[in-house]
Image 1 (cartoon, rainbow, N blue to C red):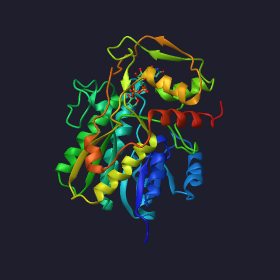
Image 2 (image 1 turned 120 degrees about the vertical axis):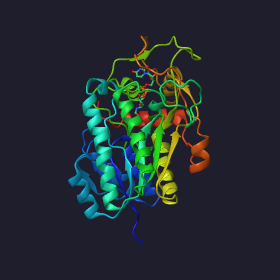
Image 3 (image 1 turned 180 degrees about the horizontal axis):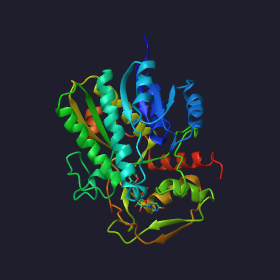
Image 4 (image 1 turned 180 degrees about the vertical axis):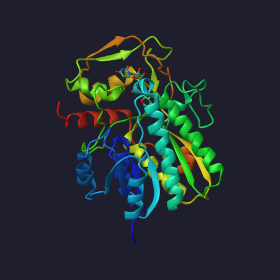
Length: 339
Ligand code: WQD
């Protein structure tokens, strides 16, 4: 029997590529669409090394209806996982129109495409950023969303609103939005991982590039917050655990009625401070990291971590990797990259 084919937009990216592996492991065939604006084609070779399968890949973006139509002509698609989006918080404040056009425009084109081609299942990549600084912790799916701190965060919030309004109009689609906390780590094979373009904005790639000597030192953005050691708290989730959540979300959707919409937090349920991340990295890799305490970063949430009871109970999903696993895998991946 032919495998169910799933379109992964942004499938050559960090989370997309790891999800392609987990889909394959679950007996589903990924079909990749990527414009390679924030990913590299050699990821396809690495994916073939890991899975033994050369996944079909189309270069383009979801704003290009023609490329979507070509994919639907070549493949009978059973669902879509929509990762493709610009995701740099700082950049989004400089280029808001580009973010709204790309992130929301592509979602609208994709939804029309799905309806016309009779594709009923969509997993949408959302973010804990929609919660801003929660008033109560841990964060549940009922925690009120707050005004976004950035155009990037707003595209996730508006994206969710578009999907909910659309489902209410009964177009015949099933949707799950996954609110990621902080994705980190890399595939244990060290063949795929995070490939930040330019200077990393996120903590863990900056740590690994500092350890690799690419960056002179890490600046810890503030240690005077109301937290156990003064540095900010986040819920760091291994990218393979996050990828697995997408597979479980799809399987869940296949069983649901049409015109269904639901949201799940995807985190570990554990909060760790920046200093705890640094110390875990040092300890598990036997390294001393060069870092200094610097000023707070504007817009930073002080502390947030997920309540995972819903995704545990409804999707039967649980994280398998620890913070130490994340730090070990991030470093192993960094060491495969040219300095
Ligand atoms: C984590 C902590 C920083 C860099 C962002 C997006 C979010 C999601 C994940 C896409 C903070 C501190 C960081 C550094 C530091 N992206 N830090 N020195 O800001 O929680 O979330 O990425 O979905 O939407 O907002 O992640 O890794 O940037 O920061 O001290 O050089 O590390 O202050 O406390 P963040 P981050």
